[in-house]
Length: 441
Ligand SMILES: [Zn+2]
Image (cartoon, rainbow, N blue to C red; front, side, top):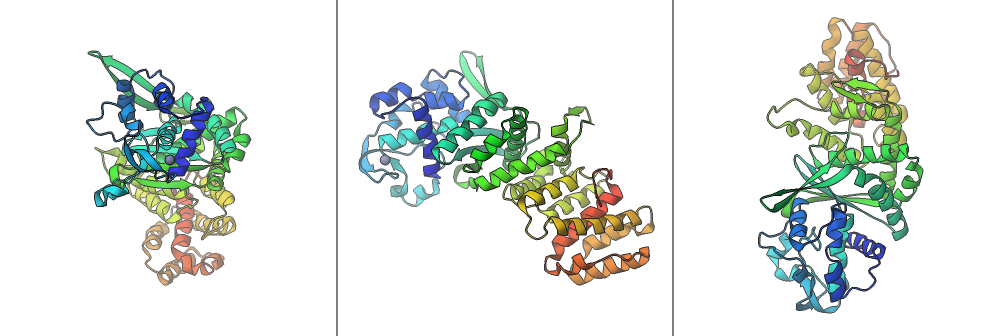
């Protein structure tokens, strides 16, 4: 991650025309990366810079009053990046914020140290670091790739989109300045992976409205995203490869296309928002009135997997069943989400064809069950604890309905019966409770 982060600093310095890194240059430009990260609000003092860094979730010690001295090498050592011996600085949260400090407890010698050039390049990388505050911690992310693609993607993302959505607001109270971050996104975000997905949805929409999607997808293929969240020694990091990023953007494009103008509560949703928004916002499991973020733990997990290229039918089925128990509506556009995802990613356990067949089977059963005393079978199937039991219940239900359906897709996937069960039940639930409009049999 060190090298990936470094490339952002190099790109920033090149774009700013800083060619040589020496003490004089460091003193002259060291506030620039902070200002760039903050969206160009005009950071003019070290004090302001430190306040902004804190607001952006950099874990500065309470004693930090200055940045500059920490950027000028003052001790002998070896640079952790280039391996050269000479004068170095000890890493600080504002130089490379993602050092696992747990190492330093074990052995002080394991701490990262950098020569002036590398310390300053790493420090400058914050210019292209993006921060989204959420209810449960802060998401930080940045991109990496070959310079040409990274620059193109960065321009599309930052100049064209991010600066539109992101702002740092400054307030002055009793002569003291305080800052707050605002990221305005269409989708709600209680957790870090949700936040990245929310960014991606608006980014894709933004690009399409300007006819820039194709270009961004092409450079995005070569670019990977680094997501970091959590804090201190317990942060988590994940990398989304360019090919996955490209597919996620294509997936969002497809779902966006399937929506139509909708009124949702008091909100008016434009076509490109409605299919993404209404499904996503309906993944809430009512649980906690005081802290609503707890209601979205399943959604965070579902989205976390989605960002890794997996569509978790079983998890989703759990959410659907909980919602039915609580007499809440099923998330609309389920079929579109699942179908588009499998079309783009190909699927692992079930592919598009298997999904269509099993979903269709569940849907047909649900239609026949509707309004009869056999509706309870959704629970019997849900509770089935093994393939045998599941299959027996299914055969039983079929007989009671006087139907004869092709159960081959079930037999064929015995080993993955839990996934098959989830897909079948989701189709059934959509026939029983869904609006029925977007489900194709
Ligand atoms: Zn070095």
